[in-house]
Image (cartoon, rainbow, N blue to C red; front, side, top):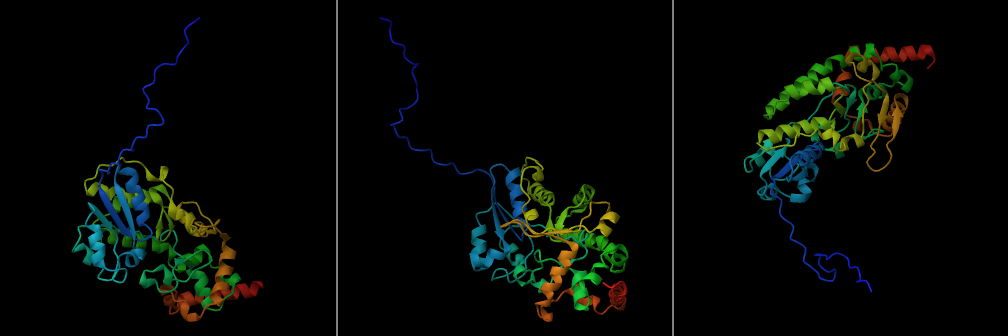
Length: 339
């Protein structure tokens, strides 16, 4: 009788023998805290991608008071961090002081808040903009972003059809929109230099790549990736050098997106659109063409007290006779056309 064939001997442990799992090893990478507004998370994600083993924590400004209660507790929390990167924040976000008070007690590196209206010169905030708090801004049909033309037209008693006549090249020129690129660029580069992170070369590269902002305060992920790269390099942290936009989702693209309106897009040499995209983080985003966006904005303004419609730029327009004449002319042309 032939000998039975046996399977090769296995050195695996029997399944009945339980072995304790190895204790998780503590990461040997740097511990990094990123403090800032809605831009901080993109910077933190970029650092995680390009710094293998790094432990990166995002500390949103809006949650500092609720989480820590006082600057003292925030300081104690940050004592365990190897690197702290922070955007400017004034007093009021956490009791006990502003970012400068924090910098006196914690070694940190400031990085700039990216604000650039060159692609979206008609975009404004309505409400208490100086507070730097989203909760104190009036929402539009797509979020905390409004058209200055639509708001001033409403406050001046124009109708929707008259307002729509003003979204064209001549009106943009008279409103100074064509000059806002240079002014906005100067502001961005100056504020970056003020916090010790000059962005002149980065800005030139962003411009060559096309539209680099979703709204005036929401940069595309590649911009935040460059900020993260600069912060890591200047603190001597070795990086992978991966392009973050190829590996990570752009979270700010899921929120409101303001179009580059055609009269301006033609001048800048970038794709133009009149489609306004709403917040899509919790539900499919609303997409409104320009006439619908203006009409819904008018309906919203009509439900609010006039005191709620505060806007620095539009308030200034009210005292400018040339701008008032521009809007009055649009109203007359609409009346003559029977609109």
